[in-house]
Amino acid sequence: MALRQVYDPEISVNVYDLGLIYELKVDENHHVKIQMTLTAPNCPMADYVVQQVKEAVDDVPGVVSSEIELVWEPAWDKSRMSEEALVELGLDE
Image (tube, rainbow, N blue to C red; front, side):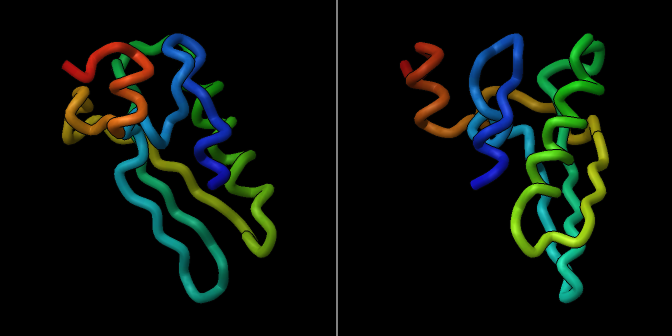
C-alpha cells in the first residue's frame, strides 16, 4: 500500500500504521479523496507530510487525481495506531 511508504519524519512510523488516515475514498473515475490528520495540530512538518501522501497516492497506477484534506476532528490518539506501530514504538503494553 502506497500510504505505508510515507513516514512521519518525527516518529519514523508510516502514516497509515500511525492511524493518521481517517478516510480514503476512490470514485468510479479513479479520483481519490483522503481525510487525514497529524499527531499534533502544530506539527512543523504538516505541509511536507501532506505533500508526501499526495505524491504517494498520485503515483499509484490508475489514480487520476487525489485530494488530501487535513482534519483535526476527531483528535488523533494512540488508540488509532496499528499493533505493529505500537510494538515498534514500545507502546504495546
